[in-house]
Amino acid sequence: MPDDTPRIELATAAGGGVARLTGQWTAAQFARPGLFRRLRGALPAARPDLAWDLRGAGQIDHVGAQMLWSHWREQWPPQLELQPGQRAVLERVAQFTMAPPPRRRLRLVDVYLEFGASILRFLGHARDFVALLGRISLDALRLAVLPHEGPWRDVSGNMYRICATALPITALVGFLIGVVLAYLTARQLRQFGADAFIVDILGIGLIRELGPMLAAILIAGRSGSSITAQIGVMRVTDELDAMRVMGISHSFRLVLPRTIALAVGMPLISVWTTLAGLAGGMLVANYSLDITPTFFMNALPKAVPLSNLTLATMKSIVFGVLIAMIGSHFGLRVKPNTESLGQGTTASVVTAITVVILIDAAFAVLFKDVGGP
Image 1 (cartoon, rainbow, N blue to C red):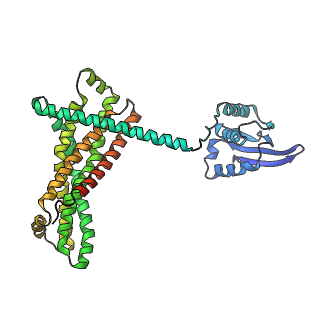
Image 2: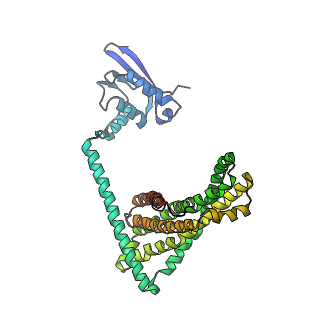
Image 3: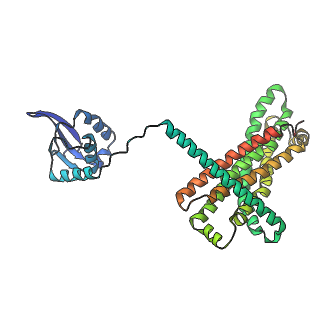
């Protein structure tokens, strides 16, 4: 059985060196492990200015022809012997091979222009978001004056889809965070005999900070993306244009119901996540530090003033409003194509999570004296 392995053999002739090809120069042969790399390593020894003899190669397909043409620097060698079928393949590769675009050098002016474009994009987002905030404020005023015209069915539907269906995942994450935090805290407190202070740490950490922020991050990733995708699909399918033609306000029928639903549901999800976290922490405290659930529940109101829960509720309302508005903002900016829909959904989730963390940090600084001992 003949050996079909593609090879390059260098020989000397009267007129100079000759590079002869043998074997099958096809994609099926190049797929063999390590063969393509070995051929690429052997090609530099066969200079393009040598005489080339391809008649010994049993077959050359477009993959092999492209390798040779690239090695020849997209020029025909001065001496070339080949079969008619091989010439046809090489001529076809030479006809359709396109040179790669020249690499652009990074210039200071390009960096400056890209930075300016980023600033303009940010200002465009800020302008549209402020405009959306103004429309939502007017819609809320209209709803207060004419409550019977409000989209209450949309509000209840969004509360179920956004809030009620998120309860299992938020409870699971909150419970696991409570378990992890309690385990890490218990190991440190046991060294100093301060086992009872686990109630203070878990209470302040979960009720004031981790509970609301975890719930907001989960809702931003789960439901914020859903809001953007729903409104974005309406843009792709021209439903938003149809609503505008019929005189239906986008902000009143699409944005306001989601904003109300999250403003009402976010504090409830926050409390739910906090309770799940406290349950996990209570379980670990009972197992690791022999602190009974009865002692934990009796010590919790004394360790955590009620103002912490009030602050957490305020934060949750702000988180809910911002998540709904950010998701709607990016959904309304989607262009009528699927690529823009994917980009808008990704940007919505990243922006919402970033804003949640920034707002939580601002609350921590502004209200640092609230809820203390």
